[in-house]
Structure formats: structure tokens, C-alpha cells
Length: 120
Image 1 (cartoon, rainbow, N blue to C red):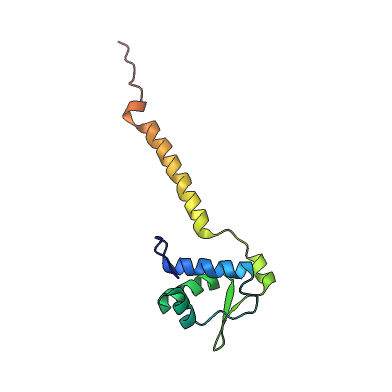
Image 2: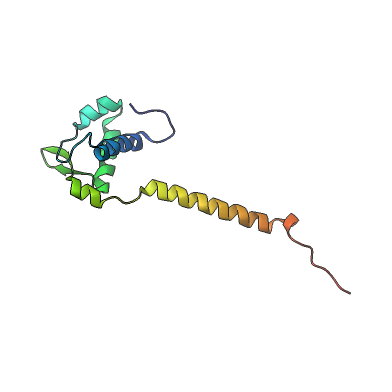
């Protein structure tokens, strides 16, 4: 079931399916439940489920076969795709930028600047 966590439902579903794939609950070569079944399971719309499955396709975890369904890719293929989660990388980068901006703000505030000394 999709929870009201602030994270979009399609990302929650993709995360759950990804965990099932990596944990072995959805085995290599196994078909994912149909879009309608996933929508019912997660209490989500068909479009939300399609977006979640699309993420997994883009990550290379599943592959669609016309007229047959969507299947978990073979284990050796999944092992090659052990790249970091892009959302995590972006979040860490945003935190680094925020720290840099905060430091710059401290350095450029009027109270941190020294008044120029005048010699006459």
C-alpha cells in the first residue's frame, strides 16, 4: 500500500519492487504481477504503477516482452547494474551545496567583514 510519506507513490512502489527483486522475493525470469494486480496490491492508479515499472525498466531490473508481460532480468545482469541510486546521489549533492552556501553566507555577512582601516 502506498503511504502518505511525502514521497510520490510511484517511487514507493518502485522501491518496494526493487527491494523484492534484489532480495530474491521476485526471482530472475519471474513475471511481475500485471499492472492491474499491482494497482490493486498497492491501492494505486494504473498510471502510478506504470511509472514505477518504467523506473525499474530504466534501471535495467526488469524487461518487458510484448504480449507476455514484464519479467525480472537474469541475476548476472542485475549484478552488473549495482550503480548508486541516483536520488541518493542527488540528495547528498544538495546537502553538500547547502553546506557550502551556508559557509559562504557566513563569510559574506556584514558582521563577519572587518571594516577597512583608514590611515590619514
